[in-house]
Amino acid sequence: MLHDRVMIKVERDTEERRSTAGIVIPATVKMANRLAWGEVCGVGVNARSVKVGDKVLFNPEEQYEVEVHGQLYLVMRERDLHAVATPQTDHGTGLYL
Image (cartoon, rainbow, N blue to C red; front, side, top):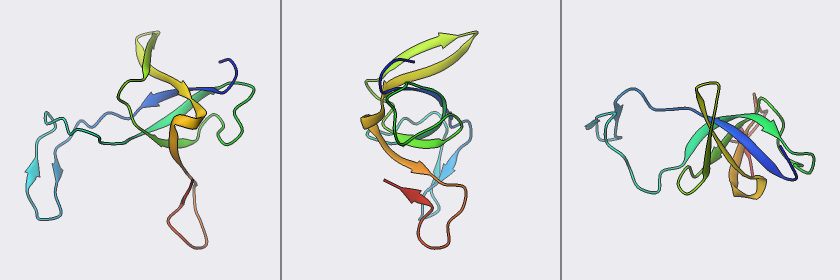
């Protein structure tokens, strides 16, 4: 990867979900403006906040897709990421922005 680009392996929702009210949402329903989690598989030399193996939150719409060895990845700038999950924290949500 070049500059501040990040390559992300997207975690696809394969199961149905439940709303907080208990309504079942099938896996086939696509929700608008929904952020997604993914794993960082490659970073450019100018990426400062993420490293390979980090779990990140991002908007999958309007990102560049690339297929490598049959696996789909997204390529985006580091600034397009919304959060990075940490393995564990003493206090807080476990995310830093």
